[in-house]
Length: 183
Image (cartoon, rainbow, N blue to C red):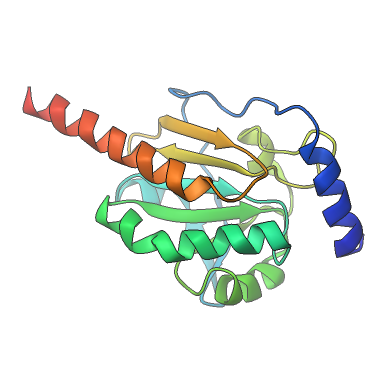
């Protein structure tokens, strides 16, 4: 399918009603999959990342599309703020790993990994497939606590609020965690 046709179908899907992502409090499905950071391919493991702190897992429809490039740039620009909160960022799409290797350099500015779910198993397990275009991931962001619980989800094909909303959710989670530890 051409990128132009895919973009048109993504726009059509955006007009569709939003479908539920996984709920807050649910256990995040574990996965290991090929990913790229700075053009270098490696195996990304959610469990290994959660052992270091919270993870912001965001799904996106297609590397190099306008909205996905905007969103990746915004996440790249905010990586230091995520790190200050102890969080790791990873993007996931159904693109092949070769495409994501290039996107990890250009779109993500080599600041965070993007993972390939060409088999669509991760997208399905996170209820992140587009309703009308199930071969593509919907634009869904999750904040996952180190114990594997989903503490926040946000779904919108508009790429402009995902960073702002996930950072706010991480700050809120950190406040709750800190006040619970103080008791």
